[in-house]
Length: 447
Image (spheres, rainbow, N blue to C red):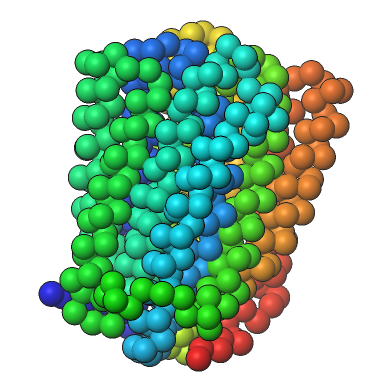
């Protein structure tokens, strides 16, 4: 079986693009999970069911985002050991990561299912969609193990330079998700919960395929079930690398839960319209997300191999590509936004809410790309605490404070819409200054 390729040699642009393209296609299919749910639910079950699915997005990301961030940190650790060609610590890092994923997946399933009604109540979920929202998210959380295990496995595979196999498995699982959505909703006429059921079945399928692939690797990245267990030194390093990223995700998603609560106060049509925009936004930003993930792996491997100048040149190329692509996407969304949002809902009021959000956010996608791109570079360099603190101040404290003041004053949902480009600009400026002024390439300590 072909060994994963290191990103420490060859043309920089080619290495990043070859890695980013399969990531983009894989992320595209992954994004299909909730978007297909929304399309089928909106067209077959109506706007109330669509709002129920939309209202769960920020809560799901809050609960799961923390652990995804932790596994991002674990991937950085794996990438560094792989780049430095240190086989024994590489094996220990991989098996500790998988063990943590199994534990976390079970824990998140139990906690999510138990506390769903309470949290939705805190969020002010409209009563006319409350029961449907509870049923959807409880089933979704029941499958947390599949989602967490998949993210841990793909983080490992991408860290050692394999971005193609996660793509293949996502294609299979996404097509399965589409088929089951149609079967459960359009044929069996089950409720909104069945959209979540289709998603978790597909997630478990992709996780299983990833585990099988890792167990068949022929090098030090091979997964051997007898090696599963907790290595205390690796846990410490995974926490050191991953906890800041996990907290960053939680900070952002906690702020977004507050934002969603304010959107909920404007009624079901606002929830449906803004939810439809969020699905489009999720698709549109995938190329940028893919470049960012490629940069994190590229930076991690090259700093592990002590190729400092190559890491700097790769970061500049990746940032330029991300920012340029993001702004082009923003322009395209402005041009085709009405058609895209109408694919999710035919209610004029909901479409209006979605377009209002789109027209305010899309012109500033370059700032969002700069913030995420710089965070990806610093994460790969082991400096994840810096973007965490910036996001805490800009995307959480300021964002929540701004909304808390402006909504009572203006009674307009545009106060919610404008808080995003404002906070994107703040974080981008701070991170650019750090990137230019600080020495972020040195200080690596591998054991």
